[in-house]
Length: 623
Image: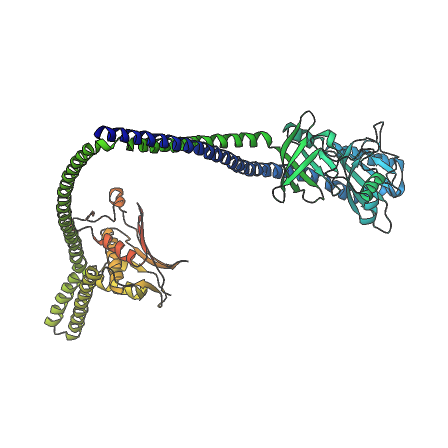
Protein backbone atom coordinates (compact mmCIF):
# COMPACT_ATOMS: atom_id res chain seq x y z
CA UNK A 1 0.00 0.00 0.00
CA UNK A 2 2.82 2.38 0.87
CA UNK A 3 4.69 1.46 -2.33
CA UNK A 4 1.54 2.00 -4.40
CA UNK A 5 1.08 5.41 -2.78
CA UNK A 6 4.66 6.28 -3.66
CA UNK A 7 4.12 5.23 -7.29
CA UNK A 8 0.87 7.19 -7.40
CA UNK A 9 2.66 10.23 -6.05
CA UNK A 10 5.39 9.84 -8.68
CA UNK A 11 2.81 9.53 -11.43
CA UNK A 12 1.03 12.61 -10.17
CA UNK A 13 4.33 14.46 -10.07
CA UNK A 14 5.15 13.35 -13.64
CA UNK A 15 1.71 14.43 -14.88
CA UNK A 16 2.08 17.77 -13.16
CA UNK A 17 5.51 18.34 -14.74
CA UNK A 18 4.12 17.51 -18.22
CA UNK A 19 1.29 19.99 -17.75
CA UNK A 20 3.75 22.64 -16.57
CA UNK A 21 5.94 21.92 -19.65
CA UNK A 22 3.03 22.38 -22.05
CA UNK A 23 2.02 25.61 -20.31
CA UNK A 24 5.62 26.85 -20.52
CA UNK A 25 5.73 26.19 -24.29
CA UNK A 26 2.49 28.12 -24.89
CA UNK A 27 3.74 30.92 -22.65
CA UNK A 28 7.02 31.21 -24.60
CA UNK A 29 5.16 31.28 -27.93
CA UNK A 30 2.87 34.06 -26.70
CA UNK A 31 5.87 35.90 -25.26
CA UNK A 32 7.69 35.77 -28.62
CA UNK A 33 4.65 37.07 -30.49
CA UNK A 34 4.07 39.93 -28.04
CA UNK A 35 7.79 40.77 -27.98
CA UNK A 36 7.98 40.99 -31.77
CA UNK A 37 4.87 43.20 -31.84
CA UNK A 38 6.32 45.48 -29.15
CA UNK A 39 9.65 45.76 -30.98
CA UNK A 40 7.89 46.56 -34.26
CA UNK A 41 5.72 49.21 -32.60
CA UNK A 42 8.73 50.69 -30.78
CA UNK A 43 10.79 50.87 -33.98
CA UNK A 44 7.91 52.49 -35.86
CA UNK A 45 7.25 55.03 -33.09
CA UNK A 46 10.96 55.76 -32.70
CA UNK A 47 11.21 56.39 -36.45
CA UNK A 48 8.28 58.81 -36.38
CA UNK A 49 9.63 60.62 -33.35
CA UNK A 50 13.16 60.87 -34.74
CA UNK A 51 11.84 62.08 -38.08
CA UNK A 52 9.77 64.79 -36.40
CA UNK A 53 12.66 65.98 -34.23
CA UNK A 54 15.08 66.01 -37.15
CA UNK A 55 12.58 67.87 -39.35
CA UNK A 56 12.25 70.58 -36.69
CA UNK A 57 16.05 70.87 -36.46
CA UNK A 58 16.41 71.02 -40.25
CA UNK A 59 13.63 73.60 -40.45
CA UNK A 60 15.36 75.79 -37.85
CA UNK A 61 18.66 75.52 -39.72
CA UNK A 62 16.92 76.17 -43.05
CA UNK A 63 15.13 79.26 -41.75
CA UNK A 64 18.47 80.73 -40.74
CA UNK A 65 19.92 80.05 -44.19
CA UNK A 66 16.81 81.40 -45.95
CA UNK A 67 16.86 84.61 -43.89
CA UNK A 68 20.51 85.18 -44.80
CA UNK A 69 19.85 84.55 -48.49
CA UNK A 70 16.84 86.88 -48.53
CA UNK A 71 18.79 89.58 -46.71
CA UNK A 72 21.64 89.33 -49.22
CA UNK A 73 19.25 89.36 -52.17
CA UNK A 74 17.41 92.40 -50.77
CA UNK A 75 20.72 94.21 -50.28
CA UNK A 76 21.76 93.45 -53.86
CA UNK A 77 18.39 94.66 -55.18
CA UNK A 78 18.61 97.97 -53.31
CA UNK A 79 21.93 99.01 -54.88
CA UNK A 80 20.76 99.72 -58.47
CA UNK A 81 17.30 101.07 -57.65
CA UNK A 82 18.61 104.55 -57.01
CA UNK A 83 20.28 104.89 -60.45
CA UNK A 84 17.10 105.29 -62.57
CA UNK A 85 15.63 107.73 -60.07
CA UNK A 86 18.74 109.93 -60.11
CA UNK A 87 19.22 109.74 -63.87
CA UNK A 88 15.56 110.56 -64.58
CA UNK A 89 16.21 113.92 -62.93
CA UNK A 90 19.66 114.46 -64.48
CA UNK A 91 19.96 117.48 -66.76
CA UNK A 92 22.26 115.72 -69.23
CA UNK A 93 19.63 112.99 -69.73
CA UNK A 94 16.94 115.64 -70.30
CA UNK A 95 19.17 117.49 -72.77
CA UNK A 96 20.05 114.35 -74.74
CA UNK A 97 16.40 113.26 -75.01
CA UNK A 98 15.07 116.72 -75.78
CA UNK A 99 17.65 117.87 -78.37
CA UNK A 100 18.95 114.55 -79.70
CA UNK A 101 22.23 116.33 -80.25
CA UNK A 102 25.09 113.86 -81.10
CA UNK A 103 27.44 115.67 -78.74
CA UNK A 104 24.96 115.48 -75.85
CA UNK A 105 24.25 111.81 -76.63
CA UNK A 106 27.99 111.04 -76.70
CA UNK A 107 28.44 112.71 -73.31
CA UNK A 108 25.51 110.70 -71.95
CA UNK A 109 26.98 107.45 -73.34
CA UNK A 110 30.24 108.09 -71.53
CA UNK A 111 28.43 109.01 -68.33
CA UNK A 112 26.35 105.80 -68.39
CA UNK A 113 29.51 103.79 -69.10
CA UNK A 114 31.22 105.32 -66.07
CA UNK A 115 28.22 104.71 -63.80
CA UNK A 116 28.02 101.01 -64.75
CA UNK A 117 31.70 100.44 -64.07
CA UNK A 118 31.24 101.83 -60.55
CA UNK A 119 28.15 99.81 -59.68
CA UNK A 120 26.99 96.23 -59.84
CA UNK A 121 24.57 96.92 -62.69
CA UNK A 122 24.91 94.94 -65.92
CA UNK A 123 23.89 97.66 -68.33
CA UNK A 124 22.36 101.14 -68.11
CA UNK A 125 20.54 102.74 -71.06
CA UNK A 126 18.09 105.52 -71.94
CA UNK A 127 15.25 105.19 -74.44
CA UNK A 128 13.16 107.82 -76.13
CA UNK A 129 9.43 108.14 -75.77
CA UNK A 130 9.05 105.68 -78.69
CA UNK A 131 11.04 102.96 -76.90
CA UNK A 132 14.18 103.19 -79.09
CA UNK A 133 17.44 103.28 -77.09
CA UNK A 134 19.18 106.64 -77.46
CA UNK A 135 22.22 106.05 -75.22
CA UNK A 136 23.65 103.03 -73.43
CA UNK A 137 26.55 102.06 -71.22
CA UNK A 138 27.55 99.39 -73.79
CA UNK A 139 27.59 101.81 -76.73
CA UNK A 140 31.14 100.68 -77.61
CA UNK A 141 30.21 96.94 -77.80
CA UNK A 142 29.22 95.21 -81.04
CA UNK A 143 25.88 94.24 -79.45
CA UNK A 144 25.21 97.77 -78.24
CA UNK A 145 21.64 98.57 -77.17
CA UNK A 146 21.74 101.92 -78.98
CA UNK A 147 19.10 101.93 -81.71
CA UNK A 148 17.25 98.86 -80.41
CA UNK A 149 13.49 99.15 -79.99
CA UNK A 150 12.24 98.24 -76.49
CA UNK A 151 8.77 99.66 -76.87
CA UNK A 152 7.20 96.19 -76.58
CA UNK A 153 8.90 95.56 -73.23
CA UNK A 154 6.65 95.66 -70.14
CA UNK A 155 9.18 97.66 -68.15
CA UNK A 156 9.00 100.42 -70.82
CA UNK A 157 5.22 100.56 -71.09
CA UNK A 158 4.69 100.39 -67.34
CA UNK A 159 7.26 103.13 -66.69
CA UNK A 160 5.59 105.35 -69.28
CA UNK A 161 2.20 104.76 -67.63
CA UNK A 162 3.03 104.75 -63.90
CA UNK A 163 6.44 106.42 -63.79
CA UNK A 164 8.43 103.37 -62.60
CA UNK A 165 8.58 99.62 -63.15
CA UNK A 166 10.59 96.49 -62.33
CA UNK A 167 10.53 93.54 -64.70
CA UNK A 168 12.60 90.34 -64.89
CA UNK A 169 13.12 89.05 -68.43
CA UNK A 170 15.52 87.56 -70.94
CA UNK A 171 17.42 90.19 -72.89
CA UNK A 172 16.44 90.23 -76.56
CA UNK A 173 19.95 91.37 -77.58
CA UNK A 174 22.25 89.87 -74.94
CA UNK A 175 20.10 86.77 -74.40
CA UNK A 176 20.97 87.03 -70.70
CA UNK A 177 18.32 87.08 -67.98
CA UNK A 178 18.16 89.97 -65.56
CA UNK A 179 16.01 92.43 -63.64
CA UNK A 180 15.10 95.61 -65.53
CA UNK A 181 14.43 98.65 -63.30
CA UNK A 182 12.99 101.58 -65.24
CA UNK A 183 12.03 105.18 -64.53
CA UNK A 184 10.19 107.68 -66.71
CA UNK A 185 11.97 110.91 -67.68
CA UNK A 186 9.62 113.87 -67.63
CA UNK A 187 6.03 114.06 -66.48
CA UNK A 188 3.15 111.85 -67.58
CA UNK A 189 1.69 114.43 -69.97
CA UNK A 190 4.95 115.06 -71.84
CA UNK A 191 7.33 112.13 -71.25
CA UNK A 192 10.79 112.39 -72.82
CA UNK A 193 11.75 108.74 -72.44
CA UNK A 194 12.72 106.05 -69.94
CA UNK A 195 15.92 105.30 -67.97
CA UNK A 196 16.55 101.55 -67.60
CA UNK A 197 19.10 99.68 -65.51
CA UNK A 198 19.55 95.95 -65.97
CA UNK A 199 20.86 93.87 -63.09
CA UNK A 200 22.10 90.29 -63.41
CA UNK A 201 22.46 87.87 -60.55
CA UNK A 202 25.40 85.71 -61.68
CA UNK A 203 27.37 86.26 -58.46
CA UNK A 204 24.43 85.38 -56.19
CA UNK A 205 23.67 82.27 -58.25
CA UNK A 206 27.33 81.24 -58.08
CA UNK A 207 27.33 81.65 -54.30
CA UNK A 208 24.15 79.60 -53.99
CA UNK A 209 25.64 76.95 -56.29
CA UNK A 210 28.69 76.54 -54.04
CA UNK A 211 26.43 75.61 -51.12
CA UNK A 212 25.16 72.65 -53.19
CA UNK A 213 21.62 73.21 -51.97
CA UNK A 214 19.02 74.05 -54.59
CA UNK A 215 17.75 77.63 -54.27
CA UNK A 216 15.46 79.48 -56.63
CA UNK A 217 13.37 82.65 -56.78
CA UNK A 218 10.02 82.71 -58.60
CA UNK A 219 7.69 85.56 -59.54
CA UNK A 220 3.96 85.95 -59.00
CA UNK A 221 3.27 83.56 -61.95
CA UNK A 222 5.52 80.88 -60.47
CA UNK A 223 8.24 81.36 -63.12
CA UNK A 224 11.73 80.66 -61.80
CA UNK A 225 13.88 83.79 -62.31
CA UNK A 226 17.01 83.30 -60.21
CA UNK A 227 18.33 79.83 -59.38
CA UNK A 228 21.42 77.96 -58.33
CA UNK A 229 20.61 75.33 -61.00
CA UNK A 230 20.87 76.98 -64.47
CA UNK A 231 18.60 74.37 -66.13
CA UNK A 232 15.76 75.38 -63.79
CA UNK A 233 15.65 78.99 -65.00
CA UNK A 234 12.33 79.91 -66.61
CA UNK A 235 10.71 76.71 -65.42
CA UNK A 236 7.57 76.99 -63.31
CA UNK A 237 6.60 75.93 -59.84
CA UNK A 238 3.26 74.77 -61.23
CA UNK A 239 1.74 74.41 -64.70
CA UNK A 240 0.69 77.82 -66.04
CA UNK A 241 -2.94 78.39 -66.95
CA UNK A 242 -3.79 79.23 -70.56
CA UNK A 243 -4.20 83.05 -70.23
CA UNK A 244 -1.07 83.41 -68.09
CA UNK A 245 0.96 81.33 -70.54
CA UNK A 246 -0.25 83.43 -73.51
CA UNK A 247 0.55 86.66 -71.68
CA UNK A 248 4.09 85.52 -70.84
CA UNK A 249 4.71 84.38 -74.44
CA UNK A 250 3.43 87.64 -75.89
CA UNK A 251 5.67 89.72 -73.62
CA UNK A 252 8.75 87.70 -74.71
CA UNK A 253 9.76 87.69 -71.05
CA UNK A 254 11.37 84.26 -71.23
CA UNK A 255 12.13 84.03 -74.93
CA UNK A 256 11.51 80.52 -76.22
CA UNK A 257 11.88 78.78 -72.84
CA UNK A 258 9.53 75.76 -72.59
CA UNK A 259 8.09 76.88 -69.22
CA UNK A 260 7.89 73.30 -67.99
CA UNK A 261 7.15 72.60 -64.30
CA UNK A 262 10.10 71.98 -62.01
CA UNK A 263 10.99 68.33 -61.32
CA UNK A 264 9.56 68.64 -57.79
CA UNK A 265 6.84 66.19 -56.80
CA UNK A 266 4.90 64.78 -53.88
CA UNK A 267 4.81 67.91 -51.70
CA UNK A 268 3.74 67.36 -48.09
CA UNK A 269 2.96 70.57 -46.23
CA UNK A 270 4.29 70.74 -42.66
CA UNK A 271 3.53 74.41 -41.97
CA UNK A 272 2.81 77.61 -43.83
CA UNK A 273 6.36 77.94 -45.18
CA UNK A 274 7.79 74.43 -44.76
CA UNK A 275 7.04 71.30 -46.77
CA UNK A 276 8.64 67.99 -47.75
CA UNK A 277 9.17 67.40 -51.47
CA UNK A 278 10.95 65.02 -53.82
CA UNK A 279 13.19 66.71 -56.40
CA UNK A 280 15.25 65.48 -59.32
CA UNK A 281 18.45 67.54 -59.23
CA UNK A 282 20.72 67.39 -62.32
CA UNK A 283 23.41 64.77 -61.82
CA UNK A 284 21.47 63.01 -59.06
CA UNK A 285 18.53 60.77 -58.39
CA UNK A 286 15.11 61.56 -57.04
CA UNK A 287 15.73 62.58 -53.41
CA UNK A 288 13.77 63.94 -50.47
CA UNK A 289 14.20 67.63 -49.56
CA UNK A 290 12.86 70.01 -46.96
CA UNK A 291 11.55 73.04 -48.85
CA UNK A 292 11.39 76.40 -47.05
CA UNK A 293 9.64 79.33 -48.72
CA UNK A 294 9.61 83.02 -47.88
CA UNK A 295 8.61 86.28 -49.54
CA UNK A 296 11.38 88.58 -50.81
CA UNK A 297 10.76 92.06 -49.32
CA UNK A 298 9.88 94.95 -51.67
CA UNK A 299 9.14 92.50 -54.51
CA UNK A 300 6.44 90.06 -55.59
CA UNK A 301 9.04 87.30 -55.66
CA UNK A 302 9.23 84.23 -53.49
CA UNK A 303 12.43 82.42 -52.53
CA UNK A 304 12.41 78.62 -52.15
CA UNK A 305 15.27 76.75 -50.48
CA UNK A 306 15.68 72.97 -50.71
CA UNK A 307 17.53 71.43 -47.81
CA UNK A 308 18.62 67.77 -48.35
CA UNK A 309 16.63 65.76 -45.84
CA UNK A 310 16.93 62.14 -46.94
CA UNK A 311 20.33 61.39 -45.42
CA UNK A 312 19.79 63.36 -42.14
CA UNK A 313 16.34 61.84 -41.65
CA UNK A 314 17.62 58.33 -42.36
CA UNK A 315 20.50 58.83 -39.93
CA UNK A 316 18.18 60.21 -37.24
CA UNK A 317 15.66 57.38 -37.71
CA UNK A 318 18.44 54.80 -37.66
CA UNK A 319 19.97 56.25 -34.50
CA UNK A 320 16.63 56.48 -32.72
CA UNK A 321 15.69 52.95 -33.70
CA UNK A 322 19.02 51.66 -32.45
CA UNK A 323 18.38 53.50 -29.21
CA UNK A 324 14.90 51.97 -29.02
CA UNK A 325 16.39 48.52 -29.61
CA UNK A 326 19.01 49.24 -26.97
CA UNK A 327 16.20 49.96 -24.51
CA UNK A 328 13.69 47.31 -25.58
CA UNK A 329 16.05 44.35 -25.82
CA UNK A 330 17.22 44.60 -22.18
CA UNK A 331 13.60 45.05 -21.07
CA UNK A 332 12.47 42.03 -23.10
CA UNK A 333 15.44 40.10 -21.79
CA UNK A 334 14.43 41.02 -18.28
CA UNK A 335 10.85 39.97 -19.00
CA UNK A 336 12.09 36.67 -20.45
CA UNK A 337 14.21 36.14 -17.40
CA UNK A 338 11.25 36.82 -15.11
CA UNK A 339 9.08 34.44 -17.14
CA UNK A 340 11.76 31.78 -17.00
CA UNK A 341 12.14 32.34 -13.29
CA UNK A 342 8.41 32.08 -12.75
CA UNK A 343 8.27 28.82 -14.69
CA UNK A 344 11.28 27.50 -12.85
CA UNK A 345 9.58 28.34 -9.58
CA UNK A 346 6.46 26.48 -10.65
CA UNK A 347 8.60 23.50 -11.64
CA UNK A 348 10.28 23.54 -8.27
CA UNK A 349 7.04 23.58 -6.31
CA UNK A 350 6.53 19.86 -6.81
CA UNK A 351 9.98 19.00 -5.49
CA UNK A 352 10.05 21.45 -2.57
CA UNK A 353 7.49 19.74 -0.41
CA UNK A 354 10.16 17.61 1.24
CA UNK A 355 12.22 20.70 2.07
CA UNK A 356 9.52 22.40 4.14
CA UNK A 357 11.05 21.45 7.40
CA UNK A 358 14.40 22.87 6.32
CA UNK A 359 12.64 26.00 5.19
CA UNK A 360 10.86 26.33 8.52
CA UNK A 361 14.15 25.94 10.31
CA UNK A 362 15.69 28.63 8.21
CA UNK A 363 12.69 30.84 8.79
CA UNK A 364 13.13 30.40 12.52
CA UNK A 365 16.80 31.32 12.26
CA UNK A 366 15.95 34.34 10.18
CA UNK A 367 13.33 35.37 12.70
CA UNK A 368 15.91 35.19 15.44
CA UNK A 369 18.30 37.31 13.38
CA UNK A 370 15.56 39.84 12.84
CA UNK A 371 14.83 39.93 16.56
CA UNK A 372 18.48 40.65 17.30
CA UNK A 373 18.51 43.30 14.62
CA UNK A 374 15.39 44.82 16.17
CA UNK A 375 17.10 44.95 19.57
CA UNK A 376 20.16 46.64 18.05
CA UNK A 377 17.92 49.13 16.28
CA UNK A 378 16.08 49.98 19.49
CA UNK A 379 19.39 50.52 21.23
CA UNK A 380 20.52 52.85 18.44
CA UNK A 381 17.21 54.74 18.65
CA UNK A 382 17.73 55.30 22.37
CA UNK A 383 21.27 56.57 21.68
CA UNK A 384 19.98 58.94 19.00
CA UNK A 385 17.35 60.34 21.36
CA UNK A 386 20.00 60.95 24.01
CA UNK A 387 22.22 62.70 21.48
CA UNK A 388 19.28 64.83 20.31
CA UNK A 389 18.54 65.91 23.90
CA UNK A 390 22.19 66.90 24.41
CA UNK A 391 22.13 68.82 21.13
CA UNK A 392 19.10 70.80 22.27
CA UNK A 393 20.91 71.74 25.51
CA UNK A 394 23.98 72.88 23.55
CA UNK A 395 21.78 74.91 21.20
CA UNK A 396 20.11 76.62 24.17
CA UNK A 397 23.56 77.43 25.62
CA UNK A 398 24.64 78.92 22.28
CA UNK A 399 21.49 81.04 22.09
CA UNK A 400 22.12 82.30 25.65
CA UNK A 401 25.75 83.09 24.85
CA UNK A 402 24.73 84.97 21.74
CA UNK A 403 22.16 86.94 23.74
CA UNK A 404 24.82 87.88 26.34
CA UNK A 405 27.19 89.03 23.58
CA UNK A 406 24.49 91.27 22.08
CA UNK A 407 23.71 92.72 25.53
CA UNK A 408 27.39 93.43 26.03
CA UNK A 409 27.58 95.37 22.74
CA UNK A 410 24.41 97.33 23.65
CA UNK A 411 25.83 98.18 27.09
CA UNK A 412 29.06 99.43 25.55
CA UNK A 413 27.05 101.54 23.11
CA UNK A 414 24.97 103.03 25.93
CA UNK A 415 28.09 104.04 27.83
CA UNK A 416 29.58 105.63 24.73
CA UNK A 417 26.44 107.54 23.67
CA UNK A 418 25.52 108.81 27.17
CA UNK A 419 29.05 110.04 27.82
CA UNK A 420 28.53 113.08 25.53
CA UNK A 421 25.36 114.56 27.16
CA UNK A 422 26.77 113.73 30.67
CA UNK A 423 29.85 115.83 29.87
CA UNK A 424 27.58 118.61 28.69
CA UNK A 425 25.46 118.35 31.89
CA UNK A 426 28.63 118.65 33.95
CA UNK A 427 29.65 121.81 32.08
CA UNK A 428 26.15 123.32 32.52
CA UNK A 429 26.22 122.44 36.25
CA UNK A 430 29.60 124.12 36.74
CA UNK A 431 28.37 127.20 34.90
CA UNK A 432 25.17 127.27 36.97
CA UNK A 433 27.19 127.15 40.20
CA UNK A 434 29.28 130.12 39.02
CA UNK A 435 26.12 132.05 38.09
CA UNK A 436 24.60 131.31 41.53
CA UNK A 437 27.77 132.52 43.27
CA UNK A 438 27.44 135.71 41.23
CA UNK A 439 23.74 135.98 42.17
CA UNK A 440 22.81 135.69 38.47
CA UNK A 441 19.68 133.56 38.72
CA UNK A 442 18.45 133.91 35.15
CA UNK A 443 21.51 132.31 33.50
CA UNK A 444 21.56 129.71 36.28
CA UNK A 445 17.91 128.83 35.60
CA UNK A 446 18.67 128.50 31.87
CA UNK A 447 21.54 126.13 32.65
CA UNK A 448 19.36 124.11 35.03
CA UNK A 449 16.64 123.95 32.35
CA UNK A 450 19.27 122.75 29.87
CA UNK A 451 20.43 120.16 32.41
CA UNK A 452 16.83 118.97 32.80
CA UNK A 453 16.45 118.76 29.02
CA UNK A 454 19.70 116.81 28.74
CA UNK A 455 18.62 114.39 31.45
CA UNK A 456 15.40 113.90 29.52
CA UNK A 457 17.55 113.34 26.48
CA UNK A 458 19.59 110.72 28.36
CA UNK A 459 16.33 109.11 29.39
CA UNK A 460 15.17 109.14 25.78
CA UNK A 461 18.46 107.53 24.72
CA UNK A 462 18.26 104.80 27.34
CA UNK A 463 14.58 104.24 26.59
CA UNK A 464 15.40 104.05 22.92
CA UNK A 465 18.18 101.53 23.54
CA UNK A 466 15.94 99.52 25.86
CA UNK A 467 13.27 99.54 23.17
CA UNK A 468 15.94 98.42 20.70
CA UNK A 469 16.96 95.59 23.00
CA UNK A 470 13.36 94.56 23.53
CA UNK A 471 11.75 95.08 20.11
CA UNK A 472 14.69 95.23 17.72
CA UNK A 473 14.30 98.56 15.92
CA UNK A 474 12.33 101.85 16.31
CA UNK A 475 9.79 102.44 13.57
CA UNK A 476 10.69 105.23 11.14
CA UNK A 477 8.67 108.45 11.12
CA UNK A 478 9.03 111.86 9.41
CA UNK A 479 11.73 113.91 11.18
CA UNK A 480 12.74 117.54 10.60
CA UNK A 481 16.39 117.24 9.51
CA UNK A 482 17.19 120.87 10.37
CA UNK A 483 15.93 120.34 13.93
CA UNK A 484 18.11 117.24 14.26
CA UNK A 485 21.18 119.23 13.20
CA UNK A 486 20.41 122.08 15.63
CA UNK A 487 19.92 119.67 18.56
CA UNK A 488 23.22 117.94 17.78
CA UNK A 489 25.02 121.29 17.76
CA UNK A 490 23.45 122.20 21.15
CA UNK A 491 24.78 118.98 22.70
CA UNK A 492 28.28 119.70 21.41
CA UNK A 493 28.31 123.39 22.30
CA UNK A 494 29.67 123.04 25.85
CA UNK A 495 32.30 120.44 24.95
CA UNK A 496 33.65 122.33 21.95
CA UNK A 497 33.19 125.86 23.29
CA UNK A 498 35.17 128.28 21.18
CA UNK A 499 35.65 125.73 18.37
CA UNK A 500 32.10 125.48 17.01
CA UNK A 501 32.83 128.44 14.74
CA UNK A 502 34.60 125.88 12.50
CA UNK A 503 31.23 124.17 12.01
CA UNK A 504 29.65 125.79 8.91
CA UNK A 505 26.11 124.55 8.29
CA UNK A 506 24.56 125.25 4.91
CA UNK A 507 21.01 126.66 5.23
CA UNK A 508 18.30 124.10 4.49
CA UNK A 509 14.52 124.41 4.09
CA UNK A 510 12.73 124.36 7.40
CA UNK A 511 10.40 121.59 6.19
CA UNK A 512 13.13 119.23 4.97
CA UNK A 513 11.93 115.95 6.52
CA UNK A 514 13.44 112.47 6.32
CA UNK A 515 12.39 109.05 7.57
CA UNK A 516 13.94 108.09 10.92
CA UNK A 517 13.91 108.79 14.68
CA UNK A 518 14.98 112.18 16.04
CA UNK A 519 17.08 110.92 18.98
CA UNK A 520 18.88 108.23 17.00
CA UNK A 521 19.66 110.57 14.08
CA UNK A 522 21.01 113.13 16.59
CA UNK A 523 23.37 110.40 17.88
CA UNK A 524 24.64 109.88 14.33
CA UNK A 525 25.28 113.59 13.73
CA UNK A 526 26.91 114.04 17.16
CA UNK A 527 29.34 111.24 16.36
CA UNK A 528 30.20 112.70 12.94
CA UNK A 529 30.48 116.33 14.17
CA UNK A 530 32.58 115.28 17.16
CA UNK A 531 34.93 113.17 15.04
CA UNK A 532 35.36 116.01 12.54
CA UNK A 533 36.06 118.63 15.25
CA UNK A 534 38.50 116.34 17.07
CA UNK A 535 40.30 115.65 13.77
CA UNK A 536 40.80 119.44 13.36
CA UNK A 537 42.20 119.97 16.86
CA UNK A 538 45.34 122.10 16.50
CA UNK A 539 44.83 122.72 12.75
CA UNK A 540 44.98 126.18 11.28
CA UNK A 541 41.95 127.39 9.32
CA UNK A 542 39.86 124.50 10.67
CA UNK A 543 36.54 124.12 8.88
CA UNK A 544 33.71 121.56 8.88
CA UNK A 545 31.14 122.03 6.09
CA UNK A 546 27.69 120.51 6.62
CA UNK A 547 25.48 120.47 3.51
CA UNK A 548 22.12 118.95 2.59
CA UNK A 549 21.14 117.95 -0.95
CA UNK A 550 18.03 116.38 -2.37
CA UNK A 551 18.51 113.42 -4.74
CA UNK A 552 16.15 111.40 -6.91
CA UNK A 553 15.60 108.76 -4.23
CA UNK A 554 16.13 110.69 -0.99
CA UNK A 555 18.29 113.20 0.90
CA UNK A 556 22.07 113.32 1.40
CA UNK A 557 23.79 115.06 4.33
CA UNK A 558 27.55 115.59 3.93
CA UNK A 559 30.06 116.37 6.71
CA UNK A 560 33.36 117.54 5.16
CA UNK A 561 36.40 118.56 7.19
CA UNK A 562 39.79 119.85 6.02
CA UNK A 563 41.75 117.76 8.50
CA UNK A 564 44.67 115.37 7.87
CA UNK A 565 42.40 112.50 6.80
CA UNK A 566 42.00 108.94 8.13
CA UNK A 567 45.00 106.56 7.93
CA UNK A 568 44.49 103.84 5.27
CA UNK A 569 44.89 101.07 7.86
CA UNK A 570 42.02 102.52 9.92
CA UNK A 571 39.91 103.39 6.83
CA UNK A 572 39.75 99.76 5.63
CA UNK A 573 38.01 98.64 8.82
CA UNK A 574 36.46 101.94 9.84
CA UNK A 575 33.04 100.46 10.62
CA UNK A 576 34.40 97.46 12.56
CA UNK A 577 33.61 97.43 16.33
CA UNK A 578 36.42 98.57 18.66
CA UNK A 579 38.49 99.85 15.72
CA UNK A 580 39.69 103.37 16.61
CA UNK A 581 42.73 105.61 16.41
CA UNK A 582 41.78 107.53 19.61
CA UNK A 583 43.49 106.65 22.88
CA UNK A 584 40.25 106.98 24.87
CA UNK A 585 37.77 105.88 22.20
CA UNK A 586 35.91 102.57 22.14
CA UNK A 587 35.55 102.39 18.37
CA UNK A 588 31.76 102.00 18.52
CA UNK A 589 30.48 105.42 17.43
CA UNK A 590 30.67 104.88 13.69
CA UNK A 591 29.47 101.28 14.00
CA UNK A 592 26.37 102.39 15.91
CA UNK A 593 25.83 105.30 13.50
CA UNK A 594 25.99 102.98 10.48
CA UNK A 595 23.46 100.59 12.09
CA UNK A 596 21.08 103.47 12.93
CA UNK A 597 21.13 104.80 9.37
CA UNK A 598 20.71 101.30 7.93
CA UNK A 599 17.67 100.74 10.19
CA UNK A 600 15.88 103.55 8.33
CA UNK A 601 16.79 102.40 4.83
CA UNK A 602 19.88 104.60 4.42
CA UNK A 603 23.64 104.19 4.24
CA UNK A 604 26.87 105.99 5.19
CA UNK A 605 29.73 106.53 2.74
CA UNK A 606 33.18 107.88 3.56
CA UNK A 607 35.96 109.36 1.44
CA UNK A 608 39.26 110.42 2.98
CA UNK A 609 42.52 111.83 1.73
CA UNK A 610 45.29 114.24 2.61
CA UNK A 611 42.94 117.22 2.19
CA UNK A 612 40.31 115.99 4.59
CA UNK A 613 37.50 113.50 5.17
CA UNK A 614 33.90 113.54 3.96
CA UNK A 615 31.12 111.44 5.51
CA UNK A 616 27.94 111.28 3.41
CA UNK A 617 24.65 110.07 4.91
CA UNK A 618 21.94 108.88 2.50
CA UNK A 619 18.42 108.98 4.01
CA UNK A 620 14.94 108.35 2.64
CA UNK A 621 12.86 111.47 2.12
CA UNK A 622 9.55 111.59 3.98
CA UNK A 623 6.51 111.59 1.69
